[in-house]
Length: 428
Image (cartoon, rainbow, N blue to C red; front, side):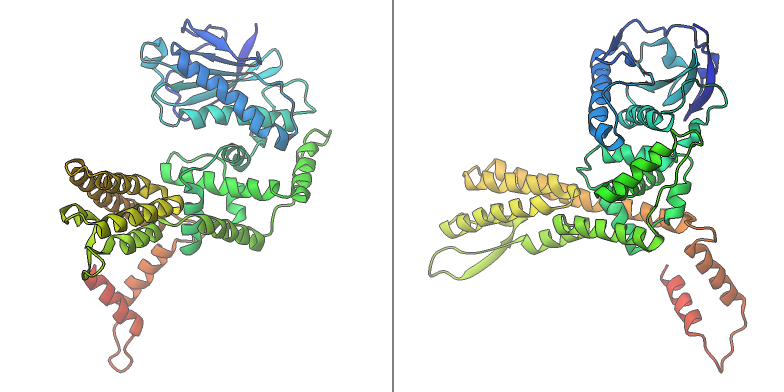
């Protein structure tokens, strides 16, 4: 087989340059799924099975949206590198290459077994291959002049996200925060993204807004028909079509609606904490004629168990159960721990309940500390990243601040802004 490189596109391509396309992979175990165009090579049978299952799931999830059949036109080979693989000495991160093989195109991808983002990386190759089926529907032979970069990043990442659930609601959180801080990217910026950032936070940012763009194009039948016509345009002799993107105003409204939909179903992290704070007190009366008293959840195990307290604790378990259904995912483990501790108390386990309450309290404090670290990182991210063609808001603030500091104050006309800035700086 006469094969040659078309493109090497690797996040880290150490060692790839020394490989030859005609050489067989130096890994003995190889399996394929029901479609011969998708294959996996690895020493780990479970990893191979997962990669092939992901191919089938991705195809099933996107076939209708892309109007594709069950067969894969473009081969995708996944190499999962285990520690005992000879390639492990030279390939330490995700890497992908596109090969020309007898006038056809093949995606050859490498990923270490312990890569935490392996699933996303592998699925990205599958989505790219599926999109090629639409973009190159009218192309029968490929060469080094084939414009494989015609598939935009927002479409690959948006469809990949669209095919997956978001159980931790990261996308909604990112969109809501961006809207609140007026840092949401413009539609022009999203469409213009050329590559997925190596920065973990900005990569999440790109994937989230790519999802919302794709979702806006596929949600209703009229927009979906327009999307299909745009894809069909690439199969015509002239190639390329015109997609009717939302207006900038409609794009911002789309993000606002998405955040609102999320708010109706789930609490934010702070809203969940506020609800927990309101629910932390247990009010009860030891008997019908006794004085009403209260204690916190953390201290309930120190109280004498009475029928009144037992009833109040049972109500508190139901209350925490309801809260967990709407709580931010970051608080789920804490709420589960408190429910388990209170349930132990109701069963009369005086030894286990105090220990579980202490563990739940520790989870509560750890979540607050971790969230503060995340908030600090997000604040740093927002003030240091340039979101538009001009300087960032933080840079503009610093520029104005320096100008005011260098200016000679006029006692007769004091500057309120200067006074405020000096006060902020003194607090910092």
